Amino acid sequence: MFGKKGGKSVRLFFTSDLHGSDVTFRKFLNASKMYEADVLIIGGDLAGKALATIIDKGNGVYEFDGKEYTSDRLQVLTKELSEKGVYYKVVTHTELEELSENKRAQEEAFKQAITDKLRSWSDVVRSKGINVPIYYNLGNDDPEYAAEAIPPEVMKRSEGEVIPLPGNYEMISYGVVNPTPWNTYREAPEEKIHSEIKRMMDKVSDPSRTVVNVHAPPYGTNLDNAFKLTSDLRPVVRGGEIETDHVGSKSVRKVIEEFKPLLGIHGHIHESRGFDRIGETLIFNPGSEYNAGILHALLVILENGKVKTHQFITG
Image 1: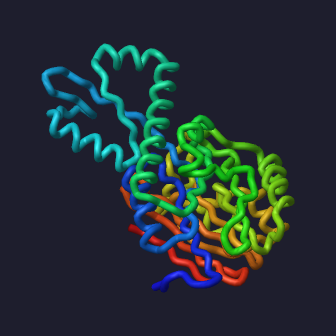
Image 2: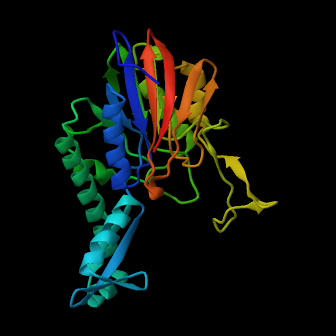
Image 3: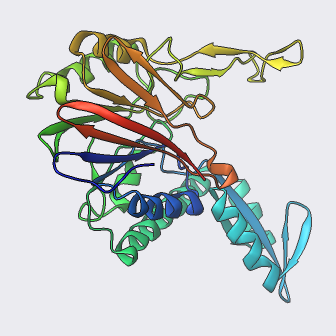
């Protein structure tokens, strides 16, 4: 659909909400080369959400989810878990009992799993010889220690800074979201979100040439329709269909209305892939199906201070 990059065009390649999935991360890197991206951006939620335990029963037999696996089949299982973004730890029965009774040990095991995964992703970047900048920000499901596992010369954390992009564009990044029912790592009241994003926007040279990379999508748009939940976090179903509701950030919308940036790229709401417009600002959410090993990404081509074209990529 798009020809090779020329003159003044800048090609941004964006994804979000990979949640520890090896296959979607690799697909992102591979596709970025195919689409000749100038800049790669990961908009938050790199960390996975779950740590599975595999019981070593001895004599080359392992148990997971009530099923037994031989050593050969174990390799297939762990690959499948990694592709879905599920961390795993192989333990004996005794170790499992100790782990289940020790919350601190559970937290340490999860921290080690996140750290190991992100270090392995950094190795993948090196092995593929990616020679364009990769920027990321932490999302609401990313603990702060996740950033410590990523060497800045491999992937640079962009949060809190004004990042210069090719073509005299700039980018600000922010990964904290408005409160969710799950009480995740990085949530804040709307007032704080507005203050912190506005502080960054006040530092940009020209809002009309600025990319706003904010994990939470703006409220009341095509980007923030999430499944409506009951008080016990079950989907609300009426007439055989799951109801949805707008759950994005009102502060993010307010900042976009105030500063009128060139582009907004967002994530967070996996089921709300789409694009919209707030005033003259185009906004996008590529969505996420990380647990199915499917990459959702977005290619945006900037030219002469405008969004020349865009393409959603799924595969």
